[in-house]
Image (tube, rainbow over all chains, first blue to last red; front, side, top):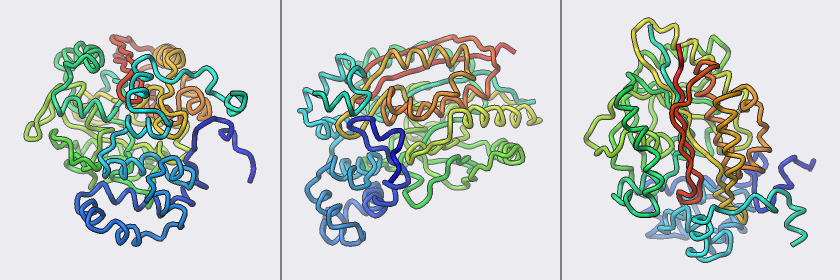
Length: 130
Length: 283
């Protein structure tokens, strides 16, 4: 596939049409969880509920493992996967901590001290040097 | 005749709504966020519009992966706060101005902006948080002080409309409102941003210098601001920072020459830099 102008942004999945196509059933699964009746059905029978969505085995496994970055790599989008996080009572800030591999407190402290700096975080080449 | 009096740019971070709904806005973490809206609330009271055209993005709430309109205009009589996974926010139902909304729809479509018309729609934090920060605490049974016409812009699936397209849609909305025969005062809200990234290993990215430049350009040179390419938003302001294209709809609807009456910028609210600006038309 042709290189995209945003492929060299590090630590970022741009949710474009290719990702949307790949993640369609995963994202539809997540989006249904915004409604209470569906959250109850998922609570009662997680495997049965998941089976209602014809996603790939790898996507289903990422859901079971709550592999948040894995879901994104397989076509998930954060606004959808955050519905699954909400189902688990995880808010956006704690979800972000999990995706960046630090503790809740470390992440919160980073945000309180001005957030992740843009310096050294613009290009994948800057991450490869680390 | 109807006229546009002012524009408001404001982040719509969901945690800001949660802080208001749970009564923790006085805590040290939140106090500086809300301090910047004190002026805005007094200003809203003094300048209360009849209608707000509220530009925001739906976060997979009214729209799922099944249907992704680039622009959608709320033409319904009312818009209820949606359950986004945590239960609906305890804030009032938004009341639409159906006649003005239909007029905008007809006008901008004939002006070659092919909007999707929504005659039934729930709204998420993208629409309710800006109203909460500008009007203050409200209960579910209250009424918002004015009517609201929501305009949804897709910024979830890449590509969103360009900044230029958003800016020109704002100009088309301006023409529509200027041609509406009833005497109405209208404000336009552009919401979302500032710099933030919610996803993957780069989550938490903040770029205050870039945000400041964006706000400066926004007031002083809106055409230049509207030409910022998508990849620059994503690289410099985070993958979700691209929401800022929505502000250009508001800016396009205002005069070229405006008065910046208020600006507020604070890091952080959850994962996000909070940005807020109030621009008044001089005419």
